Amino acid sequence: MGTTQSGILYGRLPLAEYETNFSDLHPPLDRHEALVASDRCYFCHDAPCMTACPTSIDIPLFIRQISTGNPVGSAKTIFDQNILGGMCARVCPTETLCEQACVRNTAEERPVEIGRLQRYATDVAVMENKQFYARAAATGRRIAVVGAGPAGLACAHRLAVKGHDVVIYDAREKSGGLNEYGIAAYKTVDDFAQKEVDYVLSIGGIEVRHGEALGRDFSLADLTEQYDAVFLGLGLAGVNALRIDGENAEGVDDAVDFIAALRQSKTKADIPVGRRVVVLGGGMTAIDAAVQAKLLGAEEVTICYRRGKEHMNASEFEQDLAASKGVTIRHWLQPKRIAVKDGKVAGIELEYTTLENGKLTTTGETGIIAAEQIFKAIGQTFQASGLGALRMESGRIVVDEEGHTSLAKVWAGGDCVLGGEDLTVSAVAMGRDSAESINRAFAADAPRASAVA
Image (cartoon, rainbow, N blue to C red; front, side):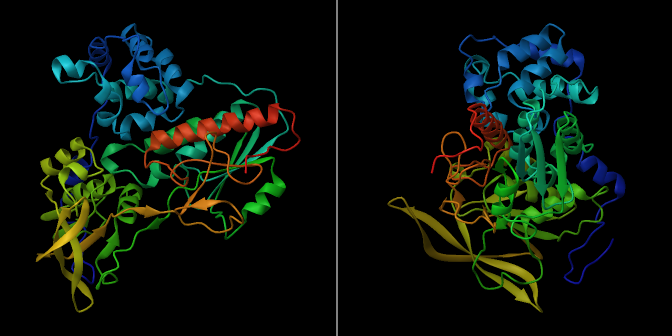
């Protein structure tokens, strides 16, 4: 067992146990299982599941194709709307989207397993490198995409199919964005995120430049001068601060950094974790951090959320998953002070909260939870420089219904835009739709793409 200065340890478990703990959360369906699962679909003509999908995949069609023994055709139906359908099948909260809308819930309280069926079809296509698209004749247009996450990749692929040349800039060493760095390791095993990136880029016409950051290596003005259009898919790089005493103590970490480190670790044994861990927040990031802390060998993991169970952004499935792994979720608690001893975390003091006339307030009662490690998962913020006069509101980029920003030639999508959701599938939809908008602007024979101010 290894140690750090703060008593947060790595190597808490035997190596084989890490492999078991971080195995696939939802093992893939085999052919027989997929046929049985697909047979449960009613193939509804009004398809409420399709309406609930942010990318509007024709779900009844792709499931019917599986049921008739045509998984490759099914994959094309999925990719026509969502080129990152493989990762979305793994990480999308289907239990609150398409599967929640499934009419099977009414009769049986068990939906068709849409997510696992989508994974079955897309895995066949990706693993066998079945390519469904060919580039159109070269248009001579060049587009810069900032951010190699879901929005940027979806935008780049759709533009490349149209015959345009795309250059993607990304500050990190790998492409994938949230899919590569922000998802729990047990949700996407076998380096699938990178396999999907390779599949997307294999269309051709897309160059990726890693290690280049907006505001440091280039500005938005540089890009608009050099390219016919620009798409910003920057994601959220900042993490909200607690703004309480002790926040800078050793042992207080950002949950997103913890999750990213786990995703880049091959064995997981080299990621240190405390014996007693507290996670602050109520979203998917909080759940991912808490569950993985437990899987690393932490003895006690507690999620503290300032509101009630019904207010948590994490789905009920995710909350139940955390509980099944031994995570304790406590509600109506907000952090007041981090207890520090010799510069290291010793615990956290929390205040009890309540709603009065719809407003969150404290009751005056407090309590302390002992901990060596505290993870912050209280939301992320948009941080970027080099954007010039781009219109912003509430800390996000303002866009119209087509993804146009206030600047000519500039589109944006994903978490960085006002109204953006922290969902891979929503980011894909915005990237795809912005690409179509950019292409329409080019088709209008304008010498330069323009945007609505």
